[in-house]
Image (cartoon, rainbow, N blue to C red; front, top):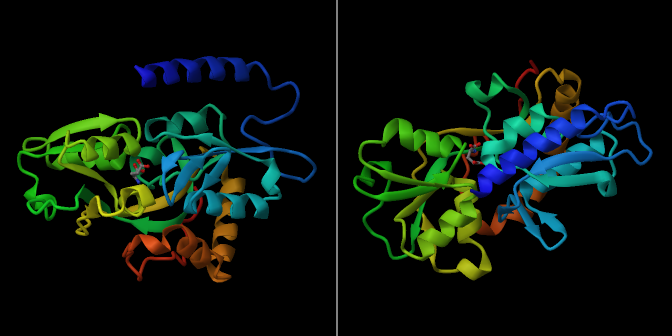
Amino acid sequence: MRQRKIAALGAIVALATTGLTACGDESGGGAGSGGGEKIVIGVKFDQPGLGLKEGAKNTGLDVDVAKYVAKELGFSEENVEFKEAPSAQREDLLANGQVKMIFATYSITDKRKAKVDFAGPYLVAGQDLLVKADNTDITGPETLNGKKLCSVTGSTSAQKVKDQFAKTVQLQEYDGYSKCVVALAAGAIDAVTTDNTILAGFAAQPANQGKFKVVGKTFSEERYGVGLKKGDKETCEKVNAALKKMVDSGDWQKAFDANLGAAGLKLDPALNPPKTFDACA
Ligand code: GLU
Protein backbone atom coordinates (compact mmCIF):
# COMPACT_ATOMS: atom_id res chain seq x y z
CA MET A 1 0.00 0.00 0.00
CA ARG A 2 2.66 2.48 1.07
CA GLN A 3 4.83 1.37 -1.81
CA ARG A 4 2.04 1.91 -4.27
CA LYS A 5 1.58 5.41 -2.91
CA ILE A 6 5.29 6.12 -3.25
CA ALA A 7 5.31 4.78 -6.79
CA ALA A 8 2.35 6.98 -7.69
CA LEU A 9 4.07 9.97 -6.14
CA GLY A 10 7.24 9.16 -8.08
CA ALA A 11 5.26 9.18 -11.30
CA ILE A 12 3.76 12.57 -10.48
CA VAL A 13 7.17 14.02 -9.62
CA ALA A 14 8.62 12.55 -12.82
CA LEU A 15 5.84 14.18 -14.87
CA ALA A 16 6.34 17.47 -13.08
CA THR A 17 10.10 17.55 -13.57
CA THR A 18 10.08 16.73 -17.27
CA GLY A 19 8.37 20.04 -17.92
CA LEU A 20 10.78 22.02 -15.82
CA THR A 21 14.08 21.97 -17.66
CA ALA A 22 13.94 25.56 -18.96
CA CYS A 23 15.70 27.02 -15.92
CA GLY A 24 18.83 25.05 -16.81
CA ASP A 25 18.92 23.31 -13.47
CA GLU A 26 19.63 19.68 -14.16
CA SER A 27 17.31 17.52 -12.14
CA GLY A 28 19.12 15.78 -9.32
CA GLY A 29 21.82 18.44 -9.28
CA GLY A 30 24.28 19.89 -11.72
CA ALA A 31 27.95 19.48 -12.44
CA GLY A 32 29.12 21.21 -9.30
CA SER A 33 31.01 24.22 -10.56
CA GLY A 34 30.79 25.88 -7.16
CA GLY A 35 28.44 28.56 -5.92
CA GLY A 36 25.30 27.40 -4.20
CA GLU A 37 24.44 24.61 -6.56
CA LYS A 38 22.79 21.66 -4.86
CA ILE A 39 23.14 17.96 -5.46
CA VAL A 40 20.51 15.40 -4.49
CA ILE A 41 21.92 12.06 -3.34
CA GLY A 42 19.94 8.90 -2.63
CA VAL A 43 20.73 7.03 0.61
CA LYS A 44 18.95 4.64 2.96
CA PHE A 45 17.14 6.15 5.95
CA ASP A 46 16.68 3.00 8.09
CA GLN A 47 20.02 1.17 8.04
CA PRO A 48 22.19 1.92 11.12
CA GLY A 49 25.91 2.18 10.35
CA LEU A 50 25.26 2.61 6.62
CA GLY A 51 22.45 5.05 5.97
CA LEU A 52 20.32 6.18 8.89
CA LYS A 53 18.23 9.30 9.32
CA GLU A 54 18.19 10.46 12.93
CA GLY A 55 16.17 13.64 13.27
CA ALA A 56 17.60 16.02 10.67
CA LYS A 57 20.91 14.13 10.49
CA ASN A 58 21.96 11.43 8.05
CA THR A 59 24.66 9.10 9.36
CA GLY A 60 26.48 5.97 8.23
CA LEU A 61 29.26 4.79 5.95
CA ASP A 62 27.23 5.31 2.76
CA VAL A 63 26.50 8.87 3.90
CA ASP A 64 30.17 9.57 4.71
CA VAL A 65 31.36 8.16 1.37
CA ALA A 66 28.65 10.24 -0.36
CA LYS A 67 29.76 13.43 1.40
CA TYR A 68 33.41 12.77 0.56
CA VAL A 69 32.64 12.16 -3.11
CA ALA A 70 30.29 15.16 -3.31
CA LYS A 71 33.02 17.37 -1.90
CA GLU A 72 35.50 16.10 -4.49
CA LEU A 73 32.90 16.94 -7.13
CA GLY A 74 32.69 20.50 -5.82
CA PHE A 75 29.65 20.34 -3.51
CA SER A 76 30.10 21.54 0.05
CA GLU A 77 28.18 19.68 2.76
CA GLU A 78 25.39 22.27 2.99
CA ASN A 79 24.72 21.81 -0.72
CA VAL A 80 24.14 18.09 -0.41
CA GLU A 81 20.51 17.07 -0.03
CA PHE A 82 19.80 13.47 0.95
CA LYS A 83 16.73 11.71 -0.38
CA GLU A 84 15.52 8.28 0.74
CA ALA A 85 16.28 5.59 -1.84
CA PRO A 86 14.46 2.35 -0.89
CA SER A 87 15.84 -0.77 -2.58
CA ALA A 88 13.01 -1.16 -5.10
CA GLN A 89 13.06 2.47 -6.21
CA ARG A 90 16.73 3.07 -6.92
CA GLU A 91 16.77 2.52 -10.68
CA ASP A 92 13.68 4.73 -11.15
CA LEU A 93 15.05 7.53 -8.95
CA LEU A 94 18.15 7.69 -11.16
CA ALA A 95 16.29 7.29 -14.45
CA ASN A 96 13.79 10.04 -13.52
CA GLY A 97 16.57 12.40 -12.45
CA GLN A 98 15.20 12.69 -8.91
CA VAL A 99 18.68 11.95 -7.58
CA LYS A 100 22.08 12.47 -9.21
CA MET A 101 23.85 9.63 -7.39
CA ILE A 102 22.91 6.78 -5.06
CA PHE A 103 25.00 5.48 -2.15
CA ALA A 104 22.63 2.95 -0.61
CA THR A 105 24.16 -0.52 -0.12
CA TYR A 106 23.54 -0.78 -3.86
CA SER A 107 25.07 -3.92 -5.38
CA ILE A 108 26.48 -3.74 -8.88
CA THR A 109 24.63 -6.33 -10.99
CA ASP A 110 24.30 -6.94 -14.72
CA LYS A 111 20.52 -6.71 -14.46
CA ARG A 112 20.72 -3.25 -12.88
CA LYS A 113 23.42 -2.20 -15.35
CA ALA A 114 20.82 -2.48 -18.10
CA LYS A 115 19.05 0.51 -16.49
CA VAL A 116 21.72 2.47 -14.60
CA ASP A 117 25.50 2.94 -14.46
CA PHE A 118 27.75 2.31 -11.50
CA ALA A 119 30.99 3.80 -10.23
CA GLY A 120 32.92 1.82 -7.64
CA PRO A 121 32.86 -0.59 -5.93
CA TYR A 122 33.56 1.14 -2.60
CA LEU A 123 32.89 -1.94 -0.41
CA VAL A 124 32.41 -5.66 -0.91
CA ALA A 125 29.89 -7.32 1.43
CA GLY A 126 28.16 -10.71 1.40
CA GLN A 127 24.64 -11.98 2.01
CA ASP A 128 24.15 -13.39 5.50
CA LEU A 129 21.45 -14.17 8.08
CA LEU A 130 20.35 -12.37 11.25
CA VAL A 131 18.65 -14.47 13.91
CA LYS A 132 17.67 -14.07 17.54
CA ALA A 133 20.63 -14.37 19.92
CA ASP A 134 19.32 -17.63 21.40
CA ASN A 135 18.66 -19.32 18.03
CA THR A 136 20.61 -22.53 17.53
CA ASP A 137 19.07 -24.18 14.47
CA ILE A 138 19.89 -21.62 11.79
CA THR A 139 23.62 -21.87 11.19
CA GLY A 140 23.84 -21.09 7.48
CA PRO A 141 21.89 -21.08 4.22
CA GLU A 142 21.72 -24.90 4.23
CA THR A 143 19.66 -24.87 7.44
CA LEU A 144 16.72 -22.81 6.18
CA ASN A 145 14.28 -25.61 5.33
CA GLY A 146 10.79 -24.66 6.45
CA LYS A 147 11.90 -21.32 7.91
CA LYS A 148 10.26 -17.94 7.58
CA LEU A 149 12.65 -15.42 6.11
CA CYS A 150 12.32 -11.67 5.72
CA SER A 151 14.00 -9.44 3.17
CA VAL A 152 13.33 -6.35 1.08
CA THR A 153 11.56 -5.96 -2.25
CA GLY A 154 13.90 -5.11 -5.11
CA SER A 155 17.03 -6.34 -3.32
CA THR A 156 19.52 -8.93 -4.52
CA SER A 157 18.93 -10.61 -1.14
CA ALA A 158 15.24 -11.32 -1.80
CA GLN A 159 16.05 -12.36 -5.36
CA LYS A 160 18.60 -14.89 -4.14
CA VAL A 161 16.06 -16.48 -1.80
CA LYS A 162 13.57 -16.73 -4.67
CA ASP A 163 16.20 -18.19 -7.00
CA GLN A 164 17.76 -20.68 -4.59
CA PHE A 165 15.41 -21.44 -1.71
CA ALA A 166 11.93 -20.78 -3.11
CA LYS A 167 10.75 -24.35 -2.63
CA THR A 168 11.80 -24.72 0.99
CA VAL A 169 11.53 -21.25 2.49
CA GLN A 170 8.69 -18.82 3.15
CA LEU A 171 9.72 -15.30 2.18
CA GLN A 172 8.18 -12.16 3.66
CA GLU A 173 9.12 -8.98 1.77
CA TYR A 174 8.97 -5.46 3.17
CA ASP A 175 10.14 -2.13 1.76
CA GLY A 176 12.88 -1.69 4.37
CA TYR A 177 15.11 -3.92 6.51
CA SER A 178 14.13 -2.14 9.73
CA LYS A 179 10.64 -3.65 9.30
CA CYS A 180 12.18 -7.12 9.01
CA VAL A 181 14.14 -6.56 12.22
CA VAL A 182 10.92 -5.57 14.04
CA ALA A 183 9.30 -8.78 12.74
CA LEU A 184 12.30 -10.82 13.94
CA ALA A 185 12.15 -9.27 17.41
CA ALA A 186 8.43 -10.08 17.57
CA GLY A 187 9.01 -13.70 16.57
CA ALA A 188 6.93 -13.37 13.39
CA ILE A 189 9.86 -14.57 11.27
CA ASP A 190 12.90 -16.78 11.90
CA ALA A 191 15.63 -14.80 10.16
CA VAL A 192 16.37 -11.62 8.23
CA THR A 193 18.53 -12.03 5.16
CA THR A 194 20.60 -9.38 3.45
CA ASP A 195 24.20 -8.12 3.42
CA ASN A 196 26.36 -8.84 6.49
CA THR A 197 27.11 -5.09 6.75
CA ILE A 198 23.44 -4.19 7.16
CA LEU A 199 22.74 -7.04 9.60
CA ALA A 200 25.80 -6.18 11.73
CA GLY A 201 24.66 -2.56 11.84
CA PHE A 202 21.27 -3.58 13.24
CA ALA A 203 22.73 -6.05 15.74
CA ALA A 204 25.15 -3.41 17.07
CA GLN A 205 22.50 -0.78 17.75
CA PRO A 206 22.41 0.09 21.47
CA ALA A 207 18.69 -0.74 21.64
CA ASN A 208 19.38 -4.20 20.14
CA GLN A 209 22.29 -5.18 22.37
CA GLY A 210 22.14 -8.91 23.12
CA LYS A 211 18.99 -9.48 21.06
CA PHE A 212 20.33 -10.73 17.72
CA LYS A 213 23.33 -12.37 16.10
CA VAL A 214 24.70 -12.44 12.58
CA VAL A 215 25.22 -16.06 11.54
CA GLY A 216 28.46 -15.22 9.72
CA LYS A 217 28.37 -17.60 6.76
CA THR A 218 28.09 -15.35 3.73
CA PHE A 219 26.64 -16.81 0.56
CA SER A 220 27.08 -14.10 -2.08
CA GLU A 221 29.38 -11.28 -3.08
CA GLU A 222 27.77 -7.83 -2.96
CA ARG A 223 29.91 -5.15 -4.57
CA TYR A 224 28.57 -1.74 -3.50
CA GLY A 225 28.50 0.70 -6.38
CA VAL A 226 27.60 4.35 -6.71
CA GLY A 227 24.42 4.40 -8.79
CA LEU A 228 24.36 6.91 -11.65
CA LYS A 229 22.02 7.76 -14.48
CA LYS A 230 22.74 5.62 -17.53
CA GLY A 231 25.29 7.36 -19.74
CA ASP A 232 26.68 9.69 -17.07
CA LYS A 233 30.27 8.68 -17.77
CA GLU A 234 31.64 12.05 -16.77
CA THR A 235 30.32 11.78 -13.22
CA CYS A 236 31.28 8.10 -13.08
CA GLU A 237 34.94 8.87 -13.76
CA LYS A 238 34.98 11.69 -11.21
CA VAL A 239 33.39 9.41 -8.62
CA ASN A 240 35.96 6.66 -9.20
CA ALA A 241 38.79 9.21 -8.79
CA ALA A 242 37.21 10.43 -5.53
CA LEU A 243 36.79 6.86 -4.22
CA LYS A 244 40.42 6.08 -5.02
CA LYS A 245 41.50 9.19 -3.11
CA MET A 246 39.31 8.25 -0.15
CA VAL A 247 40.82 4.76 0.02
CA ASP A 248 44.46 5.83 -0.61
CA SER A 249 44.32 8.62 1.99
CA GLY A 250 43.06 6.33 4.74
CA ASP A 251 39.82 8.30 5.02
CA TRP A 252 37.80 5.28 3.88
CA GLN A 253 39.19 3.22 6.78
CA LYS A 254 38.45 6.04 9.23
CA ALA A 255 34.87 6.27 7.99
CA PHE A 256 34.46 2.49 8.16
CA ASP A 257 35.82 2.34 11.73
CA ALA A 258 33.63 5.23 12.86
CA ASN A 259 30.45 3.73 11.43
CA LEU A 260 30.84 -0.04 11.55
CA GLY A 261 34.01 -0.56 13.62
CA ALA A 262 32.08 -1.55 16.73
CA ALA A 263 29.75 -3.91 14.85
CA GLY A 264 32.20 -6.85 14.85
CA LEU A 265 31.84 -7.19 11.11
CA LYS A 266 34.34 -9.35 9.26
CA LEU A 267 34.73 -8.19 5.68
CA ASP A 268 37.04 -10.00 3.29
CA PRO A 269 40.35 -8.13 3.78
CA ALA A 270 41.47 -9.11 0.28
CA LEU A 271 38.53 -7.17 -1.14
CA ASN A 272 38.20 -4.28 1.33
CA PRO A 273 38.74 -1.49 0.94
CA PRO A 274 38.61 -1.92 -2.83
CA LYS A 275 41.75 -0.69 -4.54
CA THR A 276 40.58 -0.97 -8.13
CA PHE A 277 37.41 0.35 -9.62
CA ASP A 278 35.33 -0.85 -12.56
CA ALA A 279 35.81 0.97 -15.85
CA CYS A 280 32.98 3.41 -16.51
CA ALA A 281 30.59 2.30 -19.23
N1 GLU B 1 23.14 -4.99 -1.54
C1 GLU B 1 21.89 -5.59 -1.82
C2 GLU B 1 21.14 -4.88 -2.93
O1 GLU B 1 21.62 -3.96 -3.50
C3 GLU B 1 20.99 -5.69 -0.59
C4 GLU B 1 20.89 -4.43 0.20
C5 GLU B 1 19.82 -3.46 -0.26
O2 GLU B 1 18.68 -3.89 -0.52
O3 GLU B 1 20.13 -2.27 -0.31
O4 GLU B 1 20.06 -5.26 -3.29
